[in-house]
Image 1 (spheres, rainbow, N blue to C red):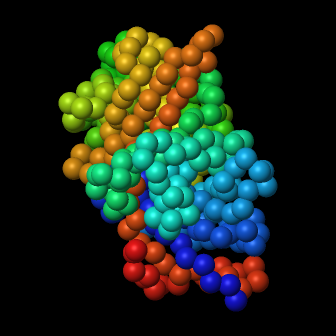
Image 2: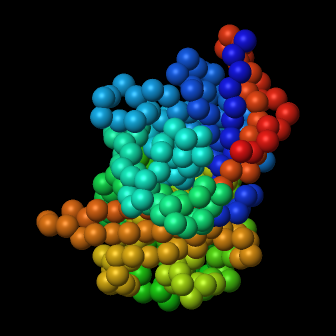
Image 3: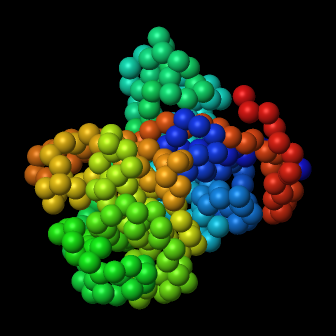
Length: 325
């Protein structure tokens, strides 16, 4: 029997049980794909994505991460990458130095660079002394305006079409690992009170070959933030994602592309509970020939550590809490 630990690490927050939780399993080299999928399918209590950290197959990467939802393996997940990086810092697998520390992770979408910003003279925003933020370089994305009737989008979300048309901004199909929709809404209260029929929304996404929906407004709860959003992905088995890194980076490029802002430094808020919103940092540097450098990230906190027992092809998450370091 093999024993590992599984951490619940909350990304895009400095408080436990906030932000976007991810299950992080270190030392997963000996686990088969079937066992990893089985572990991910056992995730309850709002842990909807897991990262399995193992040795890299490439010499220029620090480690390899495989990403699973309860239904499928993904090429990469932003918040899981941030959570895995935080877990490794917490375990001293990545030593911090003042300034920016560069780490390379091997993922299903290629190597991904993560910059860890620390200041030994500060207590930091999280439980790790000196840690300021973890910023992931985002893979290249592609955009095109979605050829989907606004009336159909409004109907499946259960809102009036004017909430979309009043913004003067387009509905866009963005592409990276999967395709998703960026949908502008006029008022934050409309988004905060959304209760879409997720079965119908999943059918809508499959009809148009999209997987998730990033629904945002410029009408924010905090003056420090440029946008407020919620993210639904029933076609992927993700009913609602509390904080979405990849889509936030995509939204940042969208806001610059359509003239909403000229600043490449943004803070975005996301979530269904206005009192416990995640905060996502987006940094965009415009490059030559339109090739932008996009970084997404924030802080993190570990909330729960549990034991994981594997015997053969059977995995069991033990209902025994291990003290958080």
